[in-house]
Amino acid sequence: MGQDVDGSPLLKRRQYDESDVRVRPGRGSRPRTKDRPAHSDAIDGMVVSVDRGRWGVVLGGDPNRGVTTMRARELGRTPIVVGDQVGVVGDLSGRPDTLARIVRVDDRSTVLRRTADDTDPYERVVVANASHLLIVVALADPPPRTGLVERALVAAYTGGLTPVLCLTKSDLADPDEFAAHFADLSVPVMLAGQDDDLTELTALLQGRVTALIGHSGVGKSTLVNRLVPDAARATGVVSGVGKGRHTSTQSVALPLPRGGWVVDTPGIRSFGLAHIESDDVIGAFSDLAVAVEQCPRGCTHLGPPADPECALDKLDGQSLRRAMAVRELLTALATNDSW
Image (cartoon, rainbow, N blue to C red; front, top):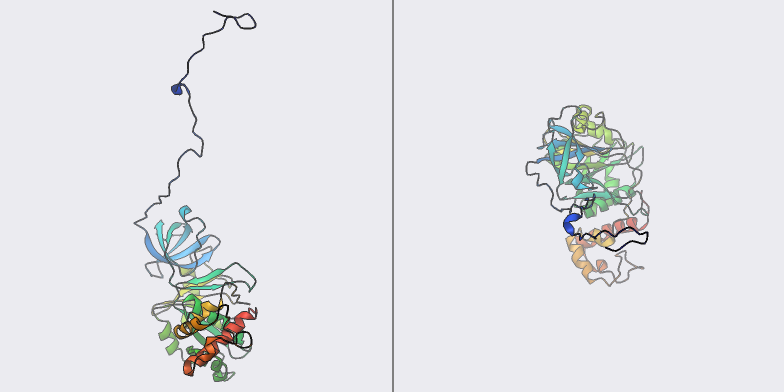
């Protein structure tokens, strides 16, 4: 046997194999899977309120079956807004201090979007799956602004909602003059002054989800209280979030007495549309969408002098009148004036 440099005998070297090596698995050694729980037992519901990472959901369309929920981990940062149709599992009792989980968000049929202003790239979905947008405008005190209505119309048309113009304080000014601005767009007009009968409006809203928007002070809250006589109680029932109180900074869906929901949104100061292109607006009108196929490349559809060959100018009759009304919407969109 040989000796080491210090004179000690060399030990016979052992032959090692893989069975002699013990590998401690690290945290990342487990293969990740894309499979997610099926949650076939999830109960369908609608989001009626959102506040600080908690969502109020009513189950099966019943306003009295409200639960407070969190977003399931597998959904990541999936945005969830009022009006979303969702699947819910967990504790569905609705008792205080219980928490269920949203595990599925269904595809949206419509979306009401806006940005903070026309330079803000961040798009906010305000309400999902509403069939109508009720644009509430006071005819006086404060004086009406066509700019907000024009922008709300653009948001409705591009998001798939049917716009309805709702005029309050009709006892203070003639509604016909203001409504005439939008006559060629065939926008339904409803009067909702204190002395106006709301029978036609309630019939329109029945069985539907309708979003309400308007500047602060136009009488939107008064209108909501007329449509939902026990709105204060209903807010507490459907909220299920925090202390169950609806504030002016959060949207909330309120159940109508004869079925359907109105989504009361906060009073807005501006309505940015940074995410909207002119072709998005034109595409909401089938006859105009066909016409602009003949426009030259890069046409903005704003007409002369910017677009001397715009095909909209070749229309006639009602289509031409509608095209000119839509052009006013496009002009408002191009002004970068979110009011």
